[in-house]
Image (tube, rainbow, N blue to C red):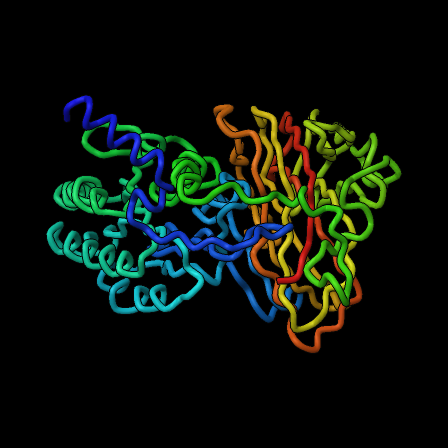
Length: 465
């Protein structure tokens, strides 16, 4: 292209909004809301088990009436974290199903996601693995992917397409898989309003004729483990930030106190959302230092856990005028089932039959040494059963064998973001005896590990939807 033509095109794209330049409809809420994310910024997800593992839900157990969790193993967590809440997802907008082929997607999942009126942007995996493994051809999968993309684009919203993770297939099936990724990049990625990204270069290494996942990045050679999730999804952030302006963080609303008559969407953390003062409580073997007034830092665990040789030091720090509760962990720790340090505060005013979310800004220093995960949980309890929603990695939800934490800034690229919980739906008739927002820092289930992690939590809010 001649230089003059190139400069003219660049000027035109600069003057247009990203959505206009790319012929996509980006639905925006107006005016922005004080807490969390405005409407019109919902990421809807389509794929197979790779994306489905980003969410989990359970119902009817003796402990939890309802549980919704957005896990860092999936893309929805990173969409929210990396955009500081400009985009949110959630289990109710996840249409990925384990084991699905592209034929299954067209027959079942695609009609459902197209009928979801909340979707503002679609994220889809080049989900050809299961079909190819069952004996389909690259040509069949490519035709299906083209149909799916065209039907999504017909809704007018942008489509983000991720290359399929390369692993588990060999010989001709592997070549088909590589061919479909090339097709997705060169053909589908060239369509108006379609964004393509390929994270395999960050998550895989070539060993002979078969691509092999980097050590610890997956739990089975294909599905991202905590350590491999950030490299798998980090390219989502720049794409989504191109389409959506930065969201107002909860810091803009920490003074926006709930009022049952005039401000029902205000912040329900009545105790001390701005984290002022140092009159909070420390509880547990390793905990010391200062805690924001009205809040508690608790260290706890079950079984043979031992934190007597660990230090969990609290302090109040200010960065660019914003106040954070810092927790610095060091020393040696033995973790067992559900061993963690929790920073929590009571919440008031949540009622049966309503839906709620919570969010906090989170910063983490790199590197992280031998820790087990982070989560933000919002829950209500009636004395017997608990209803809760979360974001992050929590052994309440994910079993007892927590592995290495995904350093949320493993290469110092990202050191802060937003945790925003999935939706907490309180069943009609549920009588609450306590309500709580908690941020948890988990230890690995291992003996005598040298540990190190520094986390800052601030700008927290809980609000009714």
